[in-house]
Length: 214
Image 1 (cartoon, rainbow, N blue to C red):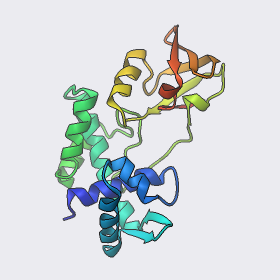
Image 2 (image 1 turned 90 degrees about the horizontal axis):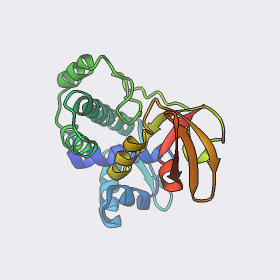
Image 3 (image 1 turned 30 degrees about the vertical axis):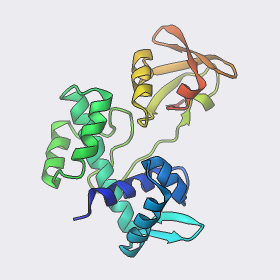
Image 4 (image 1 turned 60 degrees about the horizontal axis):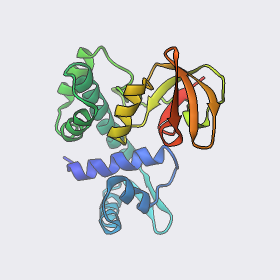
């Protein structure tokens, strides 16, 4: 069985690959909050295990085997977060912390039972797609709220789960998956939006964490 550390690296690389096909070791270090030396050592190990392909000065990408493991861990994590939030009422922070720990230790039988109990959800509480049992990930075409057009009806698809404080703010404002929103006016610092029958001003840093569809 692969160690939690190996699984965490594969998951991080997969997430970074969604933005670019080849991932720099510096990006991995930043995402995982570890030293560049630690990343270099682990990447060499993963390369020997044939879970990544690494070319010096060109970056890293997952092999098919590495991607499959990453998707399995992501499926565990997002199902667990859904259960912890919707059934057990965990806060955003506690939900993420518990899922980070448990994702490495649940059996496939346990995973399937949670999936059935929840009614086979397709998205986690943040709106991110949950990989299917056969490890397919269905992505939607979205843009961040900061990039979206003014005065157009929009629906929030998913929100960033990297910052717990941001999640609490988004929840307070109501900028959560499934909510309808319209940009009234944009300026250099942020924008005024219409949501739930009221208007609210949100800063640029907040709007970059909200992904919408027309």
